[in-house]
Image 1 (cartoon, rainbow, N blue to C red):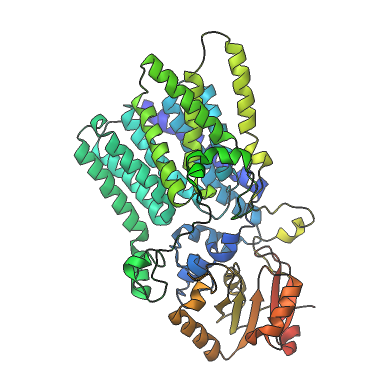
Image 2: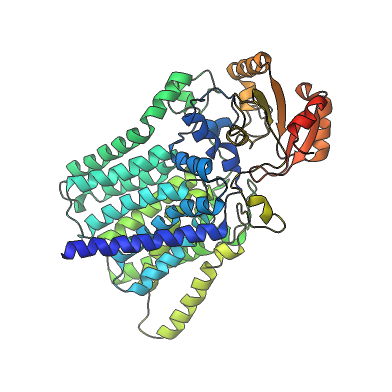
Length: 538
């Protein structure tokens, strides 16, 4: 009976968190994002409709990512596009699930509810978490699997669960599923695996149980990503296409290991003091997003002071705390060394804030406690300013445009007929293919020229620099016998006018700018005799 009551209580709590997550997502409406317009809507549509490699590089490098994580959102849009709040609510369920797991993990460290709630507030208000609520980035989704994997390990180390091999296997599966859904989860998979090796003396039957964790991880990864690895191998001779191509040497990409190094620290000083840079440098040159975040600077100071007190008192942290420290530090250095992209920091933010609360409690002085907690209250308020002062990545609630979002995806005043070839200039715009396919059959897309993902020489688009892709593009354009419509994204009127004069495929076309909640500032270009047919009602 007690076990039944325990699960019943947890189920009710989970439902409460899920409902809260959905409602917050409905309120915020965060989804005017580059990646959604580029591939999070296009990829699952292409997969479900068996179009992989039929459209020619329309989503660039991102178009070759495993689409499974995006399939739920795709079907939500298919059936409920006229009810955007329902879609936002469903997307926010992952945020609710994340809150529930944070709550359960914090409960392993604190018997008192007050620090648990502090961890919950701080963990859910970090920059990476807050501005991805309800979005299609899938970072919150994979963080739920990774955090649950961490939760299982912490329960074992905290003697809350028996250290059975099945539990290690289950923890591994959760990590493997996250990695299969999105390869950037490798940051935390390394942290978890290496953390277990560091703590092998604390684990019963360490060799067996760590191997079970690794086996679970491999099983979960292959379960989710195995089919996609095989698909990429069949199409391009590289299971990780387009990455790691220096190893696999596919003819469809440059012989190099492609990485996005724009966000990485540029000097050793930046590398060592990266958390403090966020407190003094409000934007990064790579994306210009304004971020006001004192949290990591505060955590670094708290960690240094707490470590000093621990050494002075010759006290050792509990196994759960020690593992969390090792996991966070290892994951941080993997993140800062290979990515340094803020939206990948969700677990780092959560674990960092939990450790901050632990440090605050550990550092409580015997005297002048009121002054100490007054100071800590100020630090808490400063930390909570991060989502208030930082710039949104994307939000659909902004002045004068609310009426544009009666549907989740929409383009005003454009009708694409059957048997049309969309010729794309500049990412992101691939989302237009699934959108227009709702009313047009035999639609196809081809990337013409892009501003992103340049080749090694810095002059040419990756997919124009490659002979294989150039040939595929030329064939698609030459063999298409129906209507051709050019789509120009993220350009001003003067640039579009110049393109009409210089681009061979645009010669003689007429361009109209149309409002869309998929891609702001879209230009559609057609032959003059097709204007009435394409620009419906104008």
